[in-house]
Length: 467
Image 1 (cartoon, rainbow, N blue to C red):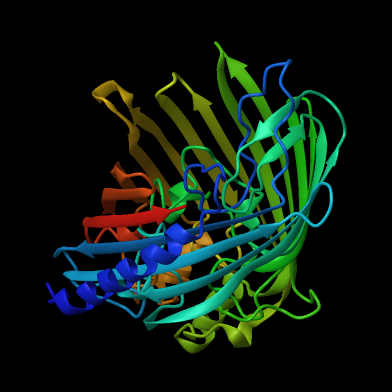
Image 2: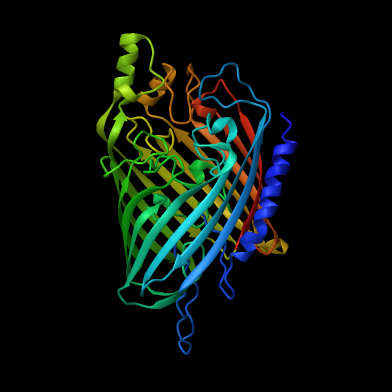
């Protein structure tokens, strides 16, 4: 295994240097909330009838820093291709984010999220369809760099109903909101800040790391290589229901940093959510669909090219043309007790096109849960366990077997196909207020859908500071 002592020590030094800045980011007297990967309202208990509703925050500053080190020992790898996972390696990623928000008028919020990133995923984030670290992007750099992933406006329009408190959190000003409301979001942000959320599996800085656990693996949502895009979304909350719809910009070329201009390529999203209570325990069920209109390669065209020429081009640009791609996803969460919560994700993609902006998954099913540490006297700790299975359409299998390269996978050949299975477990330990250390382990069987390689064991340590 490579010696990474000096680079890792350097990243730890950067993290320690950033800590005073992160601590300074908390406004005096501001409410704090558990770390969140993205924005979103976090309802709190409603104030008693004889108490006034909490005063709306007019501004807030939050910050986070996350250092993740992930490695894999040796595993069976009789052959490899351009997108294969290599055995015996250790990689690290680091990011620090500032969440700056103001309330310019009643119901309005403007948020700015500058970020510093550095590091690489295992094998440059290749070799496993449900990749093992959502803290690793498709664009890695050895030296820290600055980007602006999010700048957006959120407008909440009250429609009546009971009023409840909203906790202050990253990308969410504290205050109150009515049960019935319309929420409009416009600007640059992640589609998954609004769609496919889940209370128990959605935050790679605080819970699971696997891509196909924190998001539905078949949800090929519009994004650049860092997971963000321009667009708008509307949400209508009415009683126990929420309806969502959005329009978002695609990347100019699949899985690349640059976004399309003028929405020449775009995606439409829709989602219905129903919130319920079973035995006094909250739960939610979400059904979503997306339709993409963009320049994508059809897998049938790639296979026809192979029949005519004996190979599939590593760059599918000559085969791309305007087409439609779609998929559907189901997402559920259910509190079982004050300590235990369970979740489910399932998805289906059309399986006729190359992956656009996420990963190479046409079928997926994920199950898991999260248990708080109150049973062993560690109320701020929690443990998680999840299993996910990912699959491909028949066309997609033949594409890889003929030497095609996907977004994340492609061993140059696929003599035997097998569904990709992953099991993930983690323990999140609150070292001190605002500081968490997580140990994470994953076992991936048939990485990249290839039974000839693996199984792969992946271990990670994650240090997170958030205020």
